[in-house]
Length: 172
Image 1 (cartoon, rainbow, N blue to C red):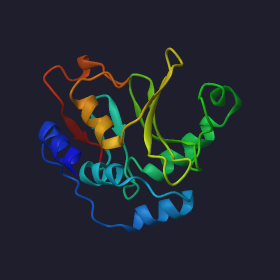
Image 2: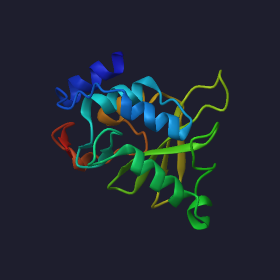
Image 3: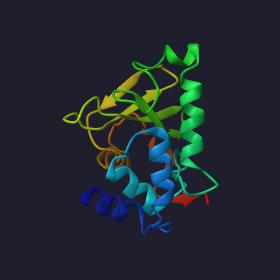
Image 4: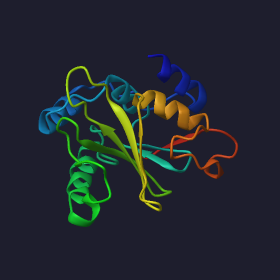
């Protein structure tokens, strides 16, 4: 995947390099959805990580920063009445729903919009909690993360968290 190579060029060599498919298979079976390959590739490469002291990415196979736990808890939270009114659609893993997969210390939540049908692509949605604005980015997760790392405005873009350029720290 070209985006992963570019992400590695900006962030540096990944240290996690997860190769066991079992945690992904179990999570996908539980949620009834197959995650996009680029999301799995980035997550497998870097694992539970914080990028630019801002963006938290988790992994289903690790007890610290466990993606499955994050998703289950987040879906439940986003379905509560007050939170449900903020999103432009239902939180969940069904067709057309918004799957919460990451968050930022600056108050944003990152969602993958599950395709509504076989011809519809995955997309990345960002819910900004200060303004309550939701922005849908019609791009893959890898392309979205790459744009974020380059400092492009993909809703999560505060450069003061990484003034010297992109970096990551393992949470494992």
